[in-house]
Image (cartoon, rainbow, N blue to C red; front, side, top):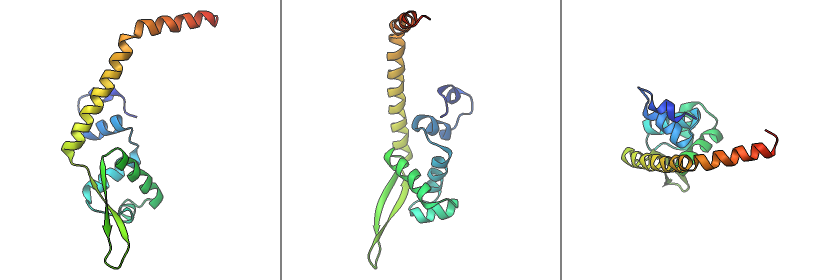
Length: 132
């Protein structure tokens, strides 16, 4: 996972942001980018495009859908049956979700900082009990 320090560097990209905030792996990013470039594609189309195993692409798509970065729409076939078409979430919505995640992370870090002295003291006391 990209570190927060890497995001603060000059030249960090939206890919760096997504990787850090959503713990995306390189395969997840490849699938996300393929969906962004090929809106409305099916699982099979994306797998073929990326030359990847269908099950691997499915896992990435499921993760991206669960993170609300990608939308999944059920499409009906004329002769019967269905398939799922994938598209990326509206970039403005992703931006708002990212801002919320940053707020959550900031609040969590502030809680850790606020209790730093007591946590440190507790840690040191435990070390004394263990002969450290």
